[in-house]
Amino acid sequence: DQQVKQNSPSLSVQEGRISILNCDYTNSMFDYFLWYKKYPAEGPTFLISISSIKDKNEDGRFTVFLNKSAKHLSLHIVPSQPGDSAVYFCAASGGWGGGADGLTFGKGTHLIIQP
Amino acid sequence: DVKVTQSSRYLVKRTGEKVFLECVQDMDHENMFWYRQDPGLGLRLIYFSYDVKMKEKGDIPEGYSVSREKKERFSLILESASTNQTSMYLCASSLTLSGTGELFFGEGSRLTVL
Image (cartoon, rainbow over all chains, first blue to last red; front, side):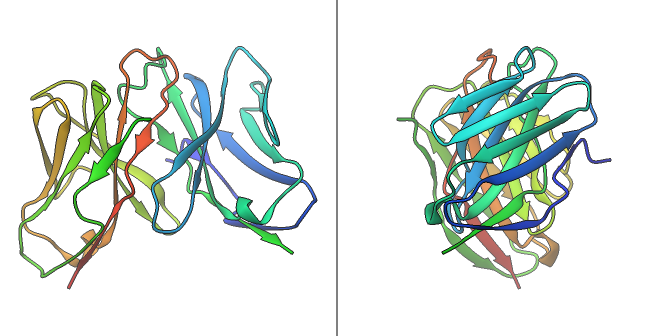
């Protein structure tokens, strides 16, 4: 049973436009959410996170929105750039949020930025 | 910067061989993890360790074992490799009680089992 779902395996966006990546979760114990970015042949790198006590977190071109009642979060990238082309993983941690038992990841969305 | 180093970027092994994947982190992190990444399946947790000599099963531990003899080193062992273990293996570490769950990943080890 998938607890973190990314329903779009891929997404194509024109350079300069907004990219919106979506993520849904089912476990109400999750209290911290993260987005990771992964290039081919490299390990994932942390991008941005949000605690369940917030509904928005912004870092430069990246903004994450959390809707707890809908168990939904989204990552907005504005404006999209060619270097943003990568696989994006949504991840969640639960309980006391210490992360000692790792994260639960979605299957990833491959974002392709078209010139 | 945190550095997580995986010993081999690419390996090719034969069915039935024993495989060791080594991972070293340099930031004195308590927690270390092994994930595998497969297309369409995302990242799945194999094993994790929250202290030296301690280990816990993740979501897909079958066919794998781990060893953590020193805090900085976490090894993944495939006792008898099979073709369905062909995958990208990712090691990660994190601080304990960080409250954020942020993981620091190595560059990955791509294993092909023939």
